[in-house]
Image (cartoon, rainbow, N blue to C red; front, side):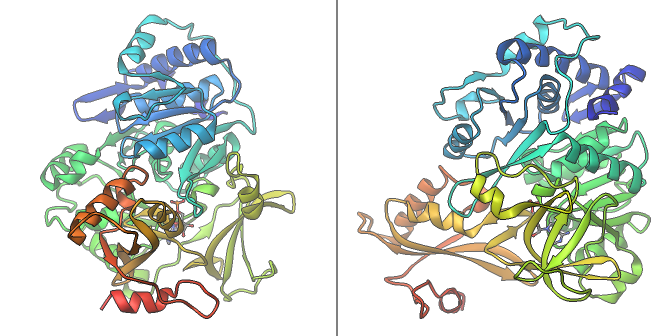
Length: 504
Ligand code: AMP
C-alpha cells in the first residue's frame, strides 16, 4: 500500500474523524482528502506532473498538510518553508530548487520572486472551485519519486536540500507504525515546524493510523500559560519533540500527568536526551514510556530507537540512541572507511532504504556523503558513535555542525554570512556550553571601518543584516569585537585560544 492509501483509507472509512486541530480550526479526514484532491488537480493542470518542487510557505495552519498531500498526489516534491525563515534564505531556496510554484500563507513575507505565488485568497478559490473527481488520482506515486525536500544548514553558506523519496518515507512510517506500539487513533502532539524533519515523526505516523494532530504554534509556545492550557485541553497520547522542548515544558511545575493523563509515549529525536530530562519526565509521568531515537534528516527522521527505562535512568550514564530499524544497517567506520570492531568509536554510517536521495543540485556534496554499499544506499553522517551489544551510542560530531536548542546548524554557514556583512572584516562563531549542551552562540568580529560611536550600535547594524539571511535560532546572542584573531601554526583561527579569551 502507498502512503496515500494508508491515509485515505481513514478518509473513506471514517470521513468525519478529526485529523488536525489547530487553535479553533478542526479538519476531518474527509476534508483533508477533498481539499488535497482539489489542489492536486489544480497543480496537475497548471504544472503537469513533472516532479518540479513546490514551496509551501507557512506555519501550522491546516492548509499545510493539505498542500503537502496535494503535492504528493500530483507528483511534485514539496519543500516546507516555515514562516520564520527570512526572505533572503527563501530566495536562495527558491533559486536553488528550481521551484515554479509557491503556496504562501503570507506572501508579504516573501522576497521578490519570479515563481507563481498562490496566496490564501487564491488557495480558497482553488479549494472551492474544483469539485475534483474523487475516483481519479491526478498522479500515482512511483518508487524513487521525491516526496519532500528539507533544507538544512550548509557549511559553505547556502542551505542544502535533502531529498526524501517515497520508499524512504514508507520505510520510516512502516517502522514506527509496526515497532513502536503506539496504537491507532491516537492524539499526537504536533509541535515542530514543518521545515524540520522532526515534524515528519508526528505527521505521517499519525495520519496513517487515523490519529489526530494536536497542533501548537510558535506564539503559543512563547506564552507558557497558553501552552499549558493547550496541552491540558489536548488529551495527547503521543508526544513528539526535541528533548529541549520537553525540558522547557518541565520548567512549568504543572507540566505532569495531571494535565496529560492519557500521555503514554514520549518520542524524542534530534539531539542528546539528557539524563536529567528523562529522570524528571519519568517522575512527572511515571506511566509513560520514554523513547530515544536517532537519525539525521538525510536518513528520514530516525533509524534507531531505544526505550529509556528506570534502569537506564538510574545508571546516570549517557543514554544509548538505540537499535537500528530492521531494514537498515549501522556501520562504524574508521578514517579510512574500514569497519571498526564493537566498542570502538568511529563515524556512524547508515545503510538501507531510509537513506534519502542526496542533496538537490549538489552533486559534489552528495557524492561526498552518499554512496552505495552492498547494493544499498549509504550515508556517512559525520556523527561519531560506537556499538555495544547491538546498541548505538552517540559521541558527538566530527565537524562544526551543532545542535542548539534542538536546531541543526553549521557554524561555517553563520561565519560565512557574518563575514559577508558590511561592517565585518573577519568573523568566528563559537558555541558556548552550559552543562552538557550548547546554550548560545557568541560571534567574535574584527570590524571594518564603520560610522558608529558605540559598539551596541555596530552590533545592532550587524544583527539586522544577519537576520535577513539567517533564521532567529542561528543568530549569535552576543557579538564581541577584537582587533585581530589568534592563529594556529598553519594559519587557521585558533578557536581554542579564542574561546578562552572570550568566555572567561
Ligand atoms: P537533523 O538532521 O536536524 O535531524 O539533525 C541530525 C543530527 O542530530 C544527527 O546527525 C546527530 O548529530 C543529532 N542527533 C539526532 N538524534 C540524536 C540523538 N538521539 N542523540 C544525539 N544526537 C542526535
